[in-house]
Amino acid sequence: MTSFPHDTAGEPDPLRALDLERLRRRTSMKWRTYPEDVLPLWVAEMDVPLAPPIVRALTDVLALGDTGYPVGTAYAEALAGFAARRWGWDGIAVERTAVVPDVMLGVVEMIGLVTQPGDPVIVNPPVYPPFFTFVAHMGRRVVEVPLGADLRLDPAALEEAFARATADGGRAAYLLCSPHNPTGTVHTAAELAAVAELAERHGVRVVADEIHAPLVAPGVTFVPYLSVPGADRGLSLMSASKGWNLPGLKAALALAGPGAAADLARMPEEVGHGASHLGVIAHTAALREATGWLDALLLGLQANRRLLAELLAEHLPQIRVHPAEATYLAWLDCRALGLGDDPAQVFLDRGRVALTAGPPFGTGGAGHVRLNLATSPDILTEGVRRMAVAVK
Ligand SMILES: Cc1ncc(COP(=O)(O)O)c(C=O)c1O
Image (cartoon, rainbow, N blue to C red; front, top):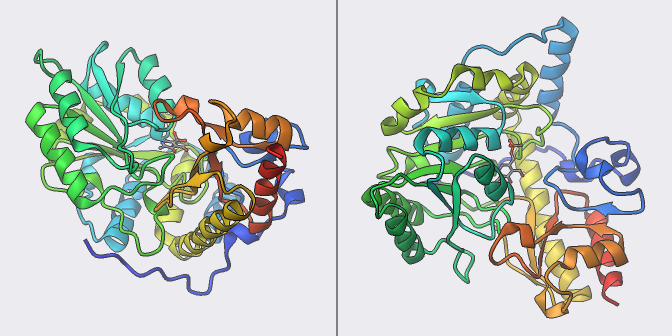
């Protein structure tokens, strides 16, 4: 698949727009979970202003009092257009999409459509902790198939797990994180085609969480799971939530491959009612009109990845950071610091910097932390300074 050039069209880097004083006035989880003396570099919210086309769309809606229920397919059409322009993929058929409240509730609904209580759901730790909690809450059994030492999918281990999960003729699902949170791994077309082939061979249903898809580094190509050969029966969740920082404006899309259309059609209509009209409008504006803003963000994130590597090399050379190809997260291996299984607690207690703890990411999480680098270079620099203070 072709990699499309990034075009910032002169847009300013949104990561440099806000200072700490402005950010501390925010009331969201990132800013209100810890006391004021803690610098928050944890939960996946970005320290950016809203993209201007989203502000315009929401302002118009508020001025009109247009705050009723969502209807129609504008969000799906906007995503189809974005996918075609960005990834050269014209495979999103609006009739095989459904609006869902958010990506994780969409994941739960999709897994619910293709498995029964007690069935196994395979995940690749270290992985986004709600993959464990949401799947357990819906009465499915989480089966871990860790990423390889290179933090990529391990096809041999997946094959063994798929075979075991379906050995008695039962149902199983594979919850793929693409791109992968927390490592920022971008799965290649060949890796995804291998997954599709294995899943088909063993009768495992693939549900791909592709929320981080817009956030690949310049020059890296994201491959939609449903675009690879053999992924016909796959299901995917996409959203503008991560790429444009819209988690407070609830809306996401479930997509079905042609062979999964009948499954998606069984999704109860009321599930879609959990998405908000404002969310649908904001996500649609993002995908349609805010790609210049996104490109400026991606350049800023790439600069921050480099800055983080330099800062760690200078102040905390014991920490190993795997170069991420996507997301705005950095997965830091702190084991050489000897801080135990949960270094995030030490960084918080002694350095007053909040990072996301590694152990809830499952196997491979101990001794690690996840750092959110979607912030200004100044705040990132201060965060690493605080981490260094913690281990002096
Ligand atoms: C992989 C992944 N899936 C889902 C979510 C949450 O998305 P939503 O708020 O749409 O449920 C996140 C948030 O960071 C994530 O990283």
